[in-house]
Image (cartoon, rainbow, N blue to C red; front, side):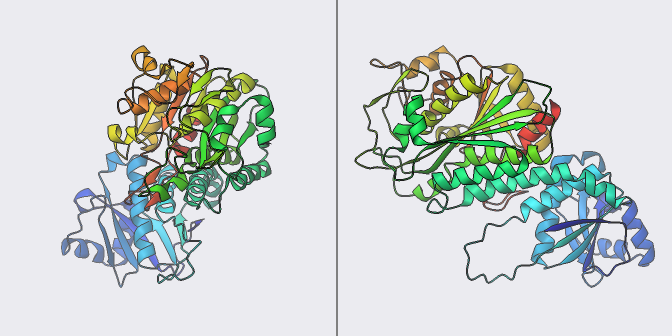
Length: 481
């Protein structure tokens, strides 16, 4: 979908998209067309089930006009506008409209931008590997009515950058692991250098010198080497303060020696979504030239069974110096994150750190597939995240931390163990408690996106597949800062 802003309503468009509010109330722009067409819009509405509710769509005037329900005018917030945009995007794609004009109402640019956001993300497709496709692809030119097209185009750049970040995250997370190895993902991160981000790739030899033994242990059974990739964006050269984003990048997770069941294992190609999320956020903030300093750190590894693999019962010394008893090699993401968090708090010294990981199935048991579990040692950070999530519609829910949970990861023979006891209970919480050990008091918030990273059934702004969750949320959080 290509976006164009225009004041020209006289061109020969495939369709003009007009808005109608609840109870069949025509928008001001729609009223203008009503007069030109001799009342055909009202007549059509009267003789149809179309009432102007959100979700209502009808084609009239030989399908040259598409009426779209806007619902209650007072309730048109960004989340509703995203949904309307998704409905429009799906409809014009289905009807193969190649050149459309959007004129819902005399909206401010921000409302039109929210509609475009929903339309572009809903019509996203990952089909690069299809050699035969029964559906003829239609490239849509989405013309958006504006009285000042140049200003609208300039102002849209921020929203466009967020869309780009979400799409990058989806693209990376949708890639198969035979294409997106740890080395390939590191190369993808290096592409950010074109946006002025300094990218450093720390390879296995350097990780060994550093003592990052946890990430090395996780990657020991794979021919694809582990890496820590550091991405530094400096948007405010006058400030020494920086914030940090840390992402889990398991390019494939077989479970290692603690092998997963075969059913559903194909989904483990996307166990690097935390890393993809960080890359997507870094891309968007750089394209926006945001006045903030942000460092992204991602840990890349592949967890495979092999004669060299780490094993249940092993004790491994982490980068922090703390020892970890491995009870389950399938609880590997927290080990990778532990070394990444230690590297971040000791070398970057951020004002606060946020980590993103498809970490536990337990968070899905607790919260389902539409709410991200968050865990934190700092309530101000939690409040910031909740405020941002209310604007983007990406639901979050804070789960508890505390001594009784921290005690569950104490080991009899090492400092900590990578699985709580009893292991079936509070799994997402004990995983977060494990991570908390390695932030060393730095303000921190952990996003367990195991449930929300993947969309099993299309939603308002995403087809089935990877969602790109948290990219928009963190962009909004940074805006609020």
